[in-house]
Image (cartoon, rainbow, N blue to C red; front, side):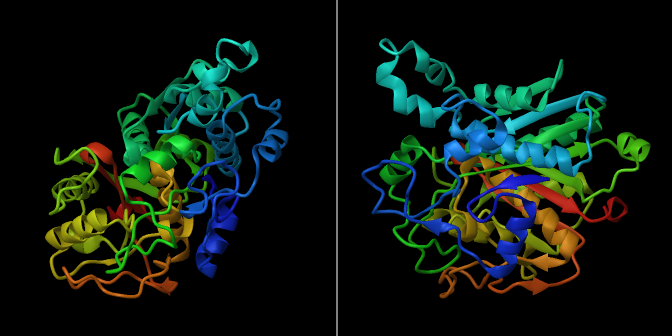
Length: 393
């Protein structure tokens, strides 16, 4: 696994921050926006210049989405003990919504007069960032593709990677997502009136909205045959996955969580598990009035009176959009490895619509199966299930 977020530049730092209850939320410092004093975000501390030097890119060569994506992907490859990335049928599936937008919006009006910055206009589209990260990793003649389904993008990337390995099309898949902060996303979410001017508080009655964040996170999935051949240490198993669409609204989730119920049900069916087998839910939990109500109702519909312990880690990192499913996949595997539930920060007041409360303290508990939700605009709902032992599913 590999990750960079507002609470750490690698897996170890992210885990330490989660255990310490650290908030990576602050005022905007790296983007010149009129909203910088109005909202709070989950910003990665390192500047582009620092990341470029670390990775060996020339100044202003690529977007921040590519830079943070390369940091996380490099760590994942190193963590997986891969010395030759082309020694097996290896694919890369990356989720993004921002792509190279941070640079495109900066140089849009300079296109005709400054040929030296035109690569930032052609680098706008989502697939460009994936191609550049794959090239940085040295992937040759491989399957490289991009998924852009808003906030479920990285979860869908993980699902597609697992399915391609299961069907025998790949031996290895580098899966996850990357999104940096940009004016476009800040302005867009501001227009929707769902950005908070303070720390977000998922599942709290007084929640005011989300904190946008930036992050990248990737996991290396490998076939059983490849794991056995190279005697690899397995961190966890992708045992379940499901995607559904409630077709309810362009940006809002169904009031009763229709898409979420379908996605979670499909994931359980794929894994061969019952609802009672789930030990912890890493909730989508954006802290918007609509999402938390919809997701809470969905959990009740699926689990009845026995909703598993759950929390949203977005109060720590901010909502990292397309990368969220990758970030929370890493956190789900960390939860399994350490038998630890991470806290839902800033929670104080129960919601009036139902009797559900998230876990607010670091909680030790034997974990076998962790369910992770990622719900995107357009009703695109995805659920992943990670298990400690494949034989349990």
